[in-house]
Structure formats: C-alpha cells, structure tokens
Figure (cartoon, rainbow, N blue to C red):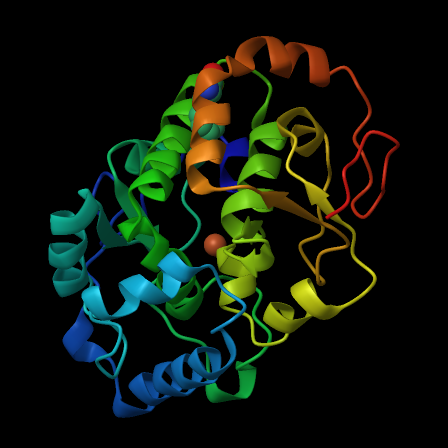
Length: 276
Ligand code: PHE
Ligand code: FE
C-alpha cells in the first residue's frame, strides 16, 4: 500500500481504468502450474490443526482441490454464489484509492504471476499463490467477506484523514497476520501466514512472539515488520466480533487521537495487554 503516497498515477498500458488486467489463464506454462501444485500440497499437509476451520472448509467449494493455478473467472463464479465476491487480476501494487474501491465493491485484487521454483520460500512481492491461496478461501465466510468490504469502505472514507499508516496496521494484523482463538485453541487466519510454509509454524509454535488479545486502539498504534517473521501477533475471538468492533467504531476521532501518540514497537508487550 505504498503507491498511494505518489500523486494519482494512470494505470499502466494494457490495464483498464480500474487497473485490472486479464489473468490470461491459458498462458500459464506447465512449470508454473507445477509451482502452484507444490506450494498447495505443502501447505495442505501442514495447515490442518493450525488454520481456522472455515479456511479448510471452503477449499473444495471454491475448486481449490483441482490442480494448477486457479482460473479467476471460474473461482469468481463460485465465490459470487457464496458471498458475492469476485477475484480480479492487477499488474502489481495499485494506488490505495483503487485498492479500497475494489474491496468496497467486493472485488479482491490479485497478482497473476507466480514465483519461480527457486523462490518457493521467499518473495518480495505478493504473487498469485499468496494472493489467491492466502486471501481467497476466507472470502467464502460471510463475516470475513463483510469485514473485507467494510475495510475497503473505511479506507475510502479515511482518504480525508492522514491515517493510512493506522489503517494499514489493522489490515496487517488481521487480514495478513491475524490469529484467532477458535474453540479454545490458537489458530491462523492471516493470508501472510497461511501462505508461508515457515511462518505457519513459527506463528503458533515459536515461544518468542507475544500473542496479544485483539484491541482495536492497540493495533492501530502498533508498527510492523515487512522483511521478517512478525515480532508479535494479535488474536481475535471470531470474524463476527472483528466485524462488529470495526464497523461499530467511528475511526475518525481515533485517527485524530491516536495519530498524536507515538507508535508502539512491534513485539512490545504493554501493561494493559492480555497475553493468550
Ligand atoms: N468503522 C470504520 C470507520 O469509521 C470503517 C472500518 C470498518 C474500517 C472496518 C476498517 C474495518 O471508518
Ligand atoms: Fe496479502
């Protein structure tokens, strides 16, 4: 979400005015599909007992059990029937306003390229495996689907305030790196964890990162790392609770109040925190 700091730029050649491009599913090579299949098999062997139940439950309904990189058209048909979301391809990072606008209209923007076999574990830029395997299964869950749209609407509304850093922290600590307490056990749901072979173990098993009960004001103030495993995680009770808390809170006064306070270091534990 860095591109928005630049003045509004035009979409690159070949992209539509909303920055979308064709996925060109027929253009993927067998080797590219094979990279997807390897990543998929590896995560599927590891995620049961680690990821929240709705993630695994929606895989078959969305066609993830079929081999190869998903065709966004077919994926969207299934998702539309379940929660009214679709998946569209974009060339890379898009301006914040464009990103928020897609989410507000229940369109998830995804990269179309896939990492090379030499980069199975480390990536600078999100690829189709992160974007689609990591983000899309939970869009079949009604409360998660509503939260994602509410986030986009909140993002559009926030453009009037100097608050992108705060709103980005909420995205980071929920949609990308969120944990949930599900039936008494700690589970993963953030796309950045779920799509990472190493972090999907580290986030639950490593003794170092604190796992702190979700607190909206606390999250809005907490910085994050983009180049290493997270130094700390936040734990929600349910998607319904996350949706309720964020929708029922007017963020405008929070942006003003919290924007004046110093950021909290990633990984810090404060006296008011509830450790899970
Ligand atoms: N309620 C928030 C606002 O007043 C919008 C929002 C909802 C932001 C959900 C993030 C997630 O702007
Ligand atoms: Fe992501």
